[in-house]
Length: 379
Length: 144
Image 1 (cartoon, each protein chain N blue to C red):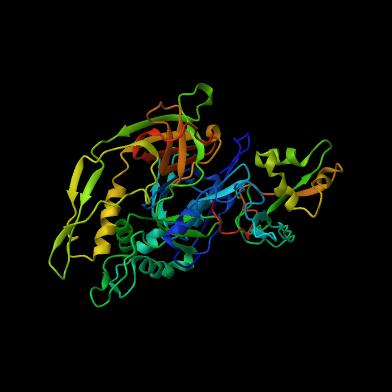
Image 2 (cartoon, each protein chain N blue to C red):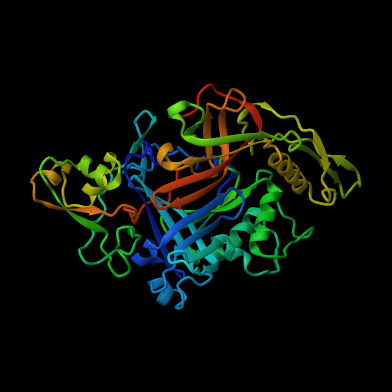
């Protein structure tokens, strides 16, 4: 993220491809790049789509495409450099390619679609048992299998510690690694995502709470005449999104079932708005009675925390006008949207759209209540 | 890194935990702690060692900008620039990176100690790192 507005300096995009170890692509491939679209989401898979111009006698059509340069499972690394500071946007694998041959010259395109490296974890199903391992240790054991792609685990212990008892229960994994890791993250109110960078070929796999603390990114200005940095911004407030989960737990010794107390969600979700939204819905969680007590408590906390974000915003900005790259999965300030909707938001997802001569970002924001907690945002 | 961090550490790796932004040459510098005799701790930035100069003819293999036509096989990470009179390192930074504050990348790629030596004499040929490349192959693994 640059610290000063973008001058007239160019935005450089670097493309690297290869089977497992990547290298910069030939210059002809770069010149043929028509557009790149990259989506990064919190707690979900990131995807990308690259469109290339396909000339009849070009290098791509004659050599690279038949030789398997764009085959599925080819690794792609896209990094952009805004004002001399490079940033890795994507580290992923090609899943699918489409060739659109056209009768008009210059209209044939090759479109390559893919997902980020978490696709590797979703390829094969396995059954595995994890005796005497708490959830974070299980995630770490799974993530260590993928270190050859430069994925470094960034795993945190659970908020509600769940000491395992091998003689009471042994945890089994069915399904793919990614499904199991996501399931464990959901049960603890955490998110799991791969974040590419800081260097090409590295990425860190974060299994932990969302980053809702720290220095905010540079604020998005809307409705501020020539100081506006955002093209458009819309907010929605869904009152029924938040629910108050109820969980009963049965003591195996006395057969007494008790209603678990409502945990405070502020450790996982530090409040961003001044007026928290009351929960209109009450849901009873199923299957908590026969779990261990700590597991039931963790699930109760997770469900309460995940449903707390009732306000969602979406908009788009031009990087050249905003001056900075908006990074997903961090906090950002908004000003100019009025008293109710100003303040800090969590950036849920960002879609980068790069074309020669333009760099657009579409983003979605979320928060749990109206009104800002402070009178200022970071400019 | 390859171990489980306690839950409280999730609050340490937050954005802004490092005093220098991503654009700064000190972003990857280590932060040391000096203990004074009375026990108070003073945080300071350790000395930044200049990165090794790129050997001519052997690319180090890290990503190099390909927007300017350096394709497979050409491993050089820099382009040459002939100094004309009236140029300054910050003007070159604006010209090649779009940011005058990035002049230090040019100074890092040349064997000079004083950045003013870069543009002292018109006609000097200096090396400019390619924009879009990652200048520091040995950068730390911090992302905030």
